[in-house]
Length: 576
Image 1 (cartoon, rainbow, N blue to C red):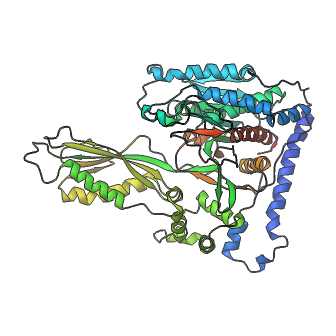
Image 2: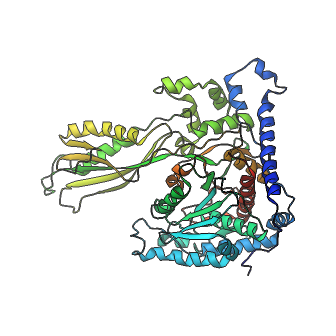
């Protein structure tokens, strides 16, 4: 069994040579971007008759394919090796082995050091150390809160902001009732010739293993980065990340300072075929989050002499009202989905004509001064289904309810939790005000006191609304400028270099939240992106969080190639 990647020696390069390489990449990218930006106006007669829609279409400029210089023979051999059957087979063994270790996170886990269910991470750490020996010899490893892994590959130029690559070690549990429904056992890591099967195969041990394979490959090739590379792997992302990323991020913030990191890449959106076009959709934004607890308190008593309305009945009325009054569907001007539609209009042959027309009519004034008006563009786009609709609307889901203890006793306390994912343009306060307005007439109808988000303890004859501690604002939106050398331009150029010019890179958005929520202060450039892609399977999210989770090996190897190129392209770019 191959435990280390092929080793080659590389003679140290002179500092002047390193600077030339860095200058070469930066110059190439800047010149190429300039040409691409000028291209729409060269030989294009449409600018004589400007239309808003044409402006929208021309705004989706695609960057050039971006490759680092390949004059170093060791790096050339390494790159060729990644495309071989030998590497693929070794990678299958590595990733399969990671999937075999159950690192499930449970919602009711106690503190680290007390709850023994955390201890599965020890075996996973041992596996990583045995599988990637060169990396564990060459990088500094810090363990934060026992199980958080923080690897630092120190660069030679301390003036450069570091690059942070993230993933998480944990997986969602597999309910015992579903085990028999799996095609292959959930922790088998079975390889069937196309896919590796098992919990965590696509969420998100694939990205963790790909990042580690990347570092091991570069170390084997004698690569010495100028820009420091940091690997930050949490261990409880599936239960909000408080113990993992929540303790790792402060270390980086303290070490590098606010805005002290060049860019972060974590798990997230990937590739999607839409409107006859393949898009790569790095997540540059995340929706906000708030859980709201609604509690109704009414008098108890014997069921043989009931009140006309019990706490369960009153809360049911409020739930019905909550579900019947949806949040507004609209596209804020800063929404990444607007950028995706502009790219669709510009590059996709099957982009819907009605969307194209509405996109052309859109104006900022509609949203800045007439927000109450229906957003026709968003409403039309939402017809594609819930997965699109909730990229433009705050979602609400009544997920947990409890009340009553006995069939012949009136329920004195009934409570429900409503989960919300907050649209760009809305805030947690938007949700709280909305629910308060819905609860007020019901409280008055039943002569109950309303305590809405005021910190008041529950009292008899009342309706209480409170927000959970996990409330989160909409994430800061990552810049997607292509008019300068930027992390987004490098990410996009790297993606097209790996997968071809036919792939259109467009800004994407996450409806859920990742561990990056803890890293907002450290950089403006956060990308939630799964850079693996297999056009032959196009398996979407790979059945994450459900039966038959799996990952294509072609997808996984593509991810390794992407990280190798991205690390080198970032290393050679002058990001200021």
